[in-house]
Amino acid sequence: QVQLVESGGGLVQPGGSLRLSCAASGFALDYYTIGWFRQAPGKEREGVSCIHSSYGNTYYLDSVKGRFTISRDNAKNTVYLQMNSLKPEDTAVYYCATRRGWGRLPPRDYEYNYWGQGTQVTVSS
Image (cartoon, rainbow, N blue to C red; front, side, top):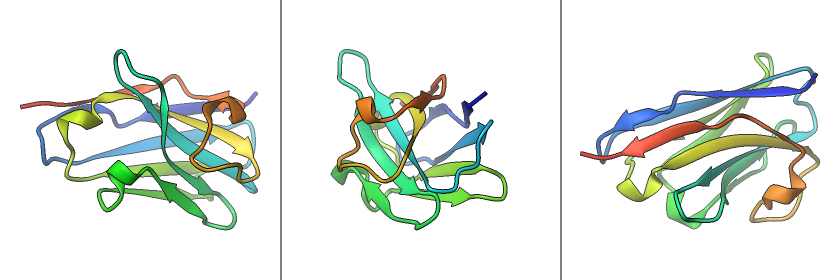
């Protein structure tokens, strides 16, 4: 059974950092793309970042470039999203999702087959 479990969300002050984790089980990450999406209240879900588990290709939403870093540990079947210099506008529920292959950019949520339950990130003073 394919399962993705996110962790690492929480409340942080502006300028702070969080590291999200996405642990995959039930399949090996090889040749899959793992994407991080977020959805703020009243807004559409948007693709924040993605990484190809085998080739290492990465993508970042313009608004997070230079602040967020995506990485993977295939031995642990886990993908991470390091988020630095967080801003109030980064507040959202963050989801990880997976699909085979690379896909179009920016990542489209409907192209991703399996999803985690989401983790809340709140940036507030």
